[in-house]
Length: 51
Image (tube, rainbow, N blue to C red; front, top):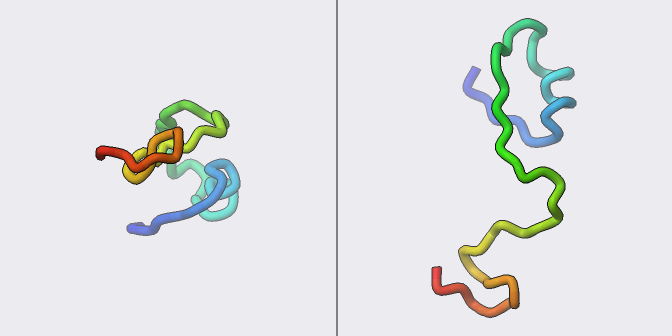
């Protein structure tokens, strides 16, 4: 298969993945937290990160 899909998981599964071809889906929370987890460049305060 070797394809990367971008979008809502449920929509992608319904529209692009054949039925009965997936045995397990693992999702890692947090979900819908409205938090920016990109701390590589800036801290939450907006200052440059030491990372």
